[in-house]
Length: 357
Image 1 (tube, rainbow, N blue to C red):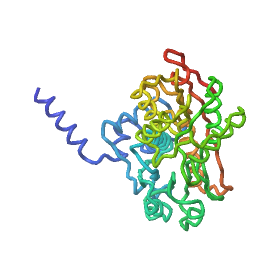
Image 2: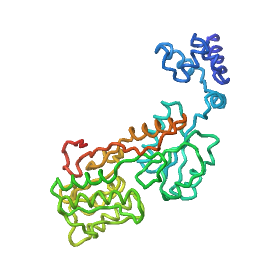
Image 3: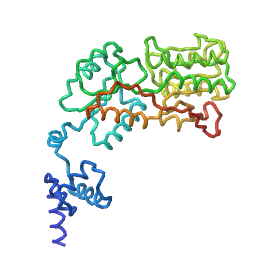
């Protein structure tokens, strides 16, 4: 018993000490070079050897010396992800995907929440943290394209989002016009003719593109555009969708379908219908945008546009990694795939969900 207690004490003491790569190699029974190859994701390492080394790293609580790796590889090993909010399910899910993809490439992601504040976004553009990061993935909200174009910092950067961006900068986004047209087309296909929209904004950006797709679908179906059915909102939150739906339900002639420019507003609109005793989708069909997890567990489940977030994260990381490595090819504008996930809010409760490309 005393021997076992002593062994556990020695193990805890060893774990508290900063393990070196040499310690990992000795524990795994390999050379320091082999341990280094595993650490740096070298492809020509046997699976069994890799497993032993990784197990030794876990047992010893090994953490690489980031400063030393920076000097050796010419990079810090950190990326910044700058987004407007983290209390938004969309950005939370996006951050999770980007973090996963970055880890596979050997990067650690540092999160910068700008709150959509112009000054906070300018800090991102000015590169004040560039001494500790290798590149930035940036989803701007407040700054216009012309100001983004004036950035003096040369740190590799990839822009996200459907807002207009300057030429010469890498950009990854979903085709919001096409996706929004598909969402509205789906409502038309369900026999809806008085289709409202929630989410108009006064500046160019995501909402203006989604409004454009909505209008294109109406025109193609021979339906008039009625500005009374397009409700502007201050924010894209549940409460905004709820209030906008209440306005629509108060009209002398109610809409029989609503396209919400994001899922949070669709959830709010759904709640307003429940409170008013309006049946969804029998009386009003609802479509959202983003495919956040909440839409798959609401009652009824919400039909939505589902962007390929994994594809977006992977494209952003691959492009940024190339730039960090010195690729100076012309800037790329990448469109990410999306699908329409048709669910109960348009098909009816109990209907099987349909995946529509």
